[in-house]
Length: 116
Image (cartoon, rainbow, N blue to C red):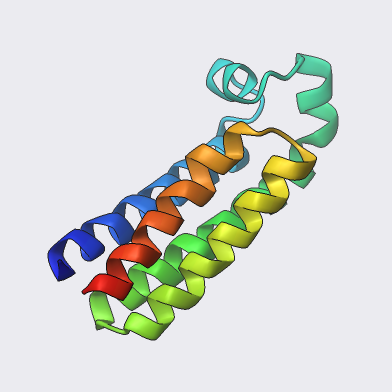
């Protein structure tokens, strides 16, 4: 079960690295525009805000990776809970897909950690 939990934590970390790349580097590119359903004008006007969001997603990934490689289960749980809260808030305020892409994988990770 511990291996499954580690894999889940790793997947959540990779998701957040991917979100970092999308928000910081691809926001105004076709991949970013398509992923977030943006117009070129809106993307240009909001690119600094998106980069800031991307940085925060990178911090979540860094915390998860730290907890994973150091074997700190409490650190993993903390950052997974941060992801769940951010995902639920994002689903309520921005797009329901965030619940499934962000919060659900973190919730699975928390369940697996509890069972490990």
